[in-house]
Length: 461
Image 1 (tube, rainbow, N blue to C red):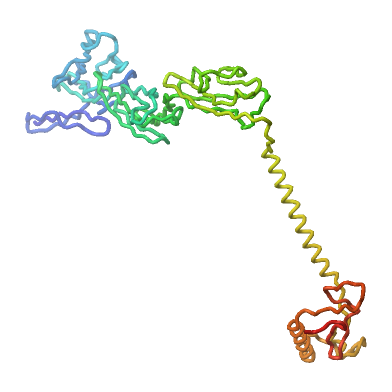
Image 2 (image 1 turned 120 degrees about the vertical axis):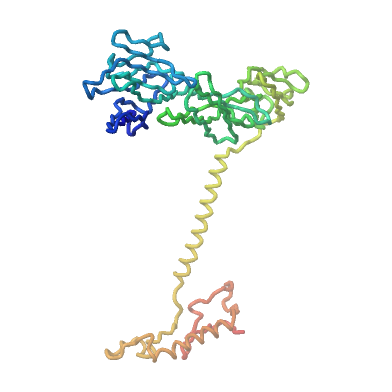
């Protein structure tokens, strides 16, 4: 008889046979009875359940002992042991982290809580049975660790060298995190990993750039991805770049005149850290007696010739000192200044008036042209056809585009061309006491037999 003893199936597949022996000509196959999960995943600080069941399939099989072992350094170390006549024993733990879910010879499910990184490894659940001997199942426990993620800026001084300006850390995670940066500023980043004593990994990433005053208070974002995170974690970082004061002097309008009161200059400065000290002076070192210093303001109670000088404002913070100058020219009399609003208004009014004059001129010319009376003796082709003023017979209707009218139109066009070729006419001074007229008057015109019109007084050249 040949006896084949197989190991229990994990979840979804079977394990290979443990041993095979020849006992008799007849063969009996016994199915593996230990039920375990092939792999269990847990998180540091949480609870892990290692399932191990031995269903009773026959009253002839007796279980005398249950043992959980862990493979450590190529050897197996007992983790939990249960004998019916003794209390459960946990050789590797005396803090109560490890326990049986049920104290039973058929259910040896093991609970570990809270999980530590050191709990990761391969576990063997073994039942001592009679008459078949020991039967076991193997479970791999994988431990994941949720990292602690932080990001912060580094205080740096503005300069010309690329240095780290921000750091992002994903500490004590497993598996290691991936870190990247989102930024509109020019720069680059790198990352390094360090494995901790408990098996977790700390990842550190630095964002590097040339620090400038313009980059101060700008925001960049650290993006952390890791298996235990449901979604990437975004951590905004506001940069802190230290730089000396940037200074300008406001308030001078180029219209400081003698006896002007309450003329003020203001020293506008910004920096990181905030400027703490303002001082005013002149190239000679002393200020005019009519000048008062009020922090970042220089107030002139009454302008006089002594104010006709250069004022120096010096601003200091912990990074450095900056000074700027403003030269003041004192006038004898105030300068008449036209406001920009007045100039704009004047330009608009002038434009409107120009358009109005242009429109009036065009209107006058058009109206004069339309109002000029028609000349006497204007030729009407209907008169030549039907008589002067007589109504045409009903069956004879004049059509301007008829064959009869074409010679008349041709004659009319030839007359117009001849008049254009003659050129201007010189008026005779036939009327004493009156000036010469530049045009033709109606009384001066005479109709000819051929339908043309000529002047009675003009001389044709």
